[in-house]
Structures are given as C-alpha cells and as structure tokens.
Image 1 (tube, each protein chain N blue to C red):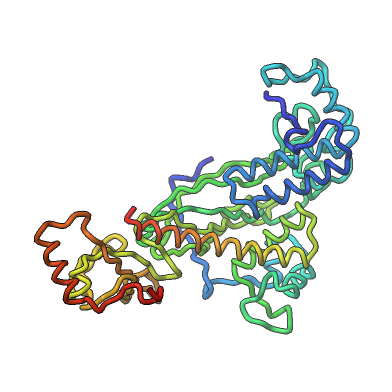
Image 2 (tube, rainbow over the protein chains, first blue to last red; image 1 turned 180 degrees about the vertical axis):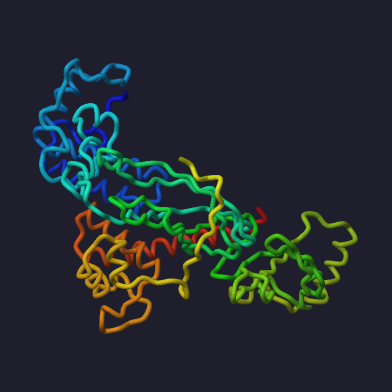
Length: 323
Length: 114
C-alpha cells in the first residue's frame, strides 16, 4: 500500500494552521470538482483532496496521521501501519460527517478503519439500513461517447457504471454493472436515454432506480454537428468554383453528388435538405466550399494564369483592406 | 451477476419526451419540494411550461440532471443558492464556449488542409 501524503495533496506544510488547511481545501475542491473541471482525473483528485481534508481538519485524526507519517512511511513510498495499530478517532462512529466514506482509499481505510464498515455514513450517520426501511433505488446518471456514425445509424453499446446496493448486513456497497444497450438511430449530443429499473436496486422491496445515459460525441475528422445539422468543409478547384461543377461530397455513411453553382466563392454554404441527422424532423447537411490550389502548376497552367491575370486585372482581392 | 448478454431497448428522452412531476423529481432527487421551488425561483431549473402553481409543473430529464448537479455543488462546495445559480450559468457558458472552440479548431484544421 502506498503512503498518502495528505499535506502534499492539499499543498500545505506540516505546520499549516487549520485555517490554511481549510483555505487550501476549498480552493482545490472548487478546482477539481467533477462538475466543474474537465481534467481527465478530476474525479480522483477531488476524492484525494476530500480525503486529505477529512483527516487534516480533525485535530485528533491529524495527530494520529502525523504520528504515522513519522514512523509508518518507508523510503520507497510504501506504507505499513505499525503492528497493532488502531485508530482512536475512527470514522463511521464519530458523529455526523458529510464525507462519503465509500469514496476513500485503502490507505484511509487501513488507518482510520470503519470507512466501509460505517455503511451509508453520509445520509444516515453510520450504521446499516434498518430491515424494515423501504426505499426506491438511486437513479444512476452515466455518459456514453459515440462516434458520429454510431449515433447516426444507431448501434449496440456496452455501458459500465456503478450502482449502490445493500449487502446482507445492510451495508451499502458499490457494484460495477455492465449492460448491452441498443442506441436508436439519430441520437444527438446532450440527449438522454433512460433504462427503466437499471439503476441501483431498491431497499426493503422498494423499486429499483433508473439508468440515465447522456450521449456525447467523439470528434470526427471531417464532420461537425450543430443541432440536427451536419457540417462538412469540401475543397473545390478554382475552375470548379468559377465555372460550376458537379462534385461528390461525403455524407455520414454515404456520398452524394452536389452541383456547385457557377461563380462560387470560398466559404459559400450549400444546404443538402434532409441529409443531416435522421428523426421526425431530419436535419440538413451544410457543405462549406473551400477553394483549394494545386501545390504545383505546369508551365501550361502558368501561362493560362497569366492570361487570367490580364483578363481580370480590375479585380482587387484586398479591397476590404483598403490597399 | 452480469446481464451483458441481454440487449436492452432504451427510451429516448427529449423535449417532447416524458417528463417528471414535482413529486417525481423530488423522489428522484431525494429532496424536498421547497428546494426544487427555490431552484425554479432562482432560475437554476425550469419546468417545461411555466405555471404559477407548482403542482402543475413538469420537468424534463435535463432539469433532473441539473438538480443533481446543484445538489453536488451545494454539498461539496457549500454554495448558497445565488452562488449556485451564477456558477451553473457560468459553467453552461464555459461548456458552450468549449464546444465553440472545438468547432472552430475543427474548421481551422480543415481550412489548413490538415
């Protein structure tokens, strides 16, 4: 087991005052709150910060921790509590706490014990559920990342999430649950699906909670989505823009031929009705034209450009810059 | 006890999808109606259709996940309701801006021919 340096987690010195500890905790809790932060390991960091504060805010726990820190930590970073170690402050037994002991590390468990033994300590002040209590199971909110093609055509996906259930002693323990889910075609980012009864099981015969899954999209190399519309930038040659042309354009999972109007400019948008996200009111695909130049020109092409320059000599592409 | 061999059909929730009454959202959010009413008063969540009488309110699933978010922020960061309202608004703005930056970066990469 690794030693957890709670002072380092909060970024305070060993001699930090309770005020400094509270201040550091508040700042880091705001920074790493999973509803605020987009950092990948925000959830873990937030839990670490909460665990560190749980110990360092309490003078008794802090004194015990300081003692262990002095004698228990080994040079290689590993940790073993001294033989016969038993915490006097404990966790689950001592009064009301808002911290959720289910979230704390093995290290915390080893030192202050009772974390998981304390049952549903947040809401119920320690101790297991009474057998005669009837309660609906928790709803679980999860997210699923889909490729655009998967959302567009529908797919089957495996989702894993944690539910909380009571064991035979009434202790609430987390359990990992995995389901195969059929995602219907045309789901959009931010939309939710519900699986009735797939959340945490009810207690004392209460009905189970539901599972809500919010859809998010993995970025696509070519397509971007805005509402129900799919946007794609399509390069065209200068002569296709000038003379008009029929070009092949990709759609999600297929392709279509699109007529580029004569005299098109870069950035011009063409709307392909009904080629966006499927549904009751299907979206459109928006093609954004982008004029692309060949990297090299042949001698013949250069001559033609010279002729073009002569024919279009009144055109000033920089007129908006007043030069 | 894995159920992964069963393929489950899902219910899609959107604006014209199913809604929750005030009582249902309280049950699911494990909170009192007063708390939901305060969140509505502060504009943190809104019923699908405005009504002066709370018993007629219906909420979509977006309101439910926002309620849970508000509860977590209040519990973990000890925020009061005006602070919560402002933070959630700013978080929405940040989220929208992140998306916009993502879209613009995407456009730039395409225009640069990457």
